[in-house]
Length: 132
Image 1 (cartoon, rainbow, N blue to C red):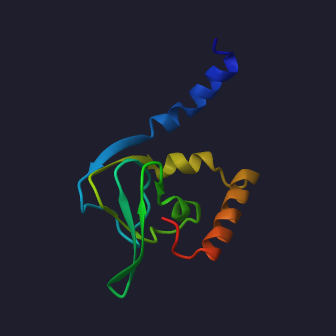
Image 2 (image 1 turned 30 degrees about the vertical axis):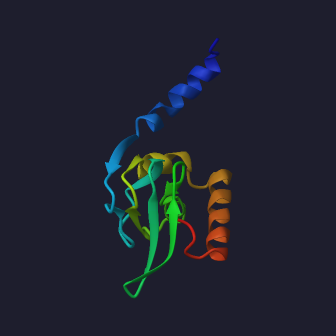
């Protein structure tokens, strides 16, 4: 049986559930490039994505991300442009979540948002160029 509170929670999250789409990226397709403005947060539903940190046109510090991984989350939380280029290593299906809808969940000045941003800054400072 669904209670009234559960129905309210479903209704509150319906905008979020409608805020994404899925997209197929063929092998060697660029998902996004380093330095570009963030429009979406991505979740890998299937496939493999390579996270490429570019230095002087030489690729290094590459990381392979798989199903369930997010792309652009750290950059979005820290309010910066994409810090890496993302490339489909295999044909992949990604969920695209609009930046606006994600930011609606982490309202500014709420303690959860402040804590999340503080943790993201600490993690990013300790592990430069590790996060996608």
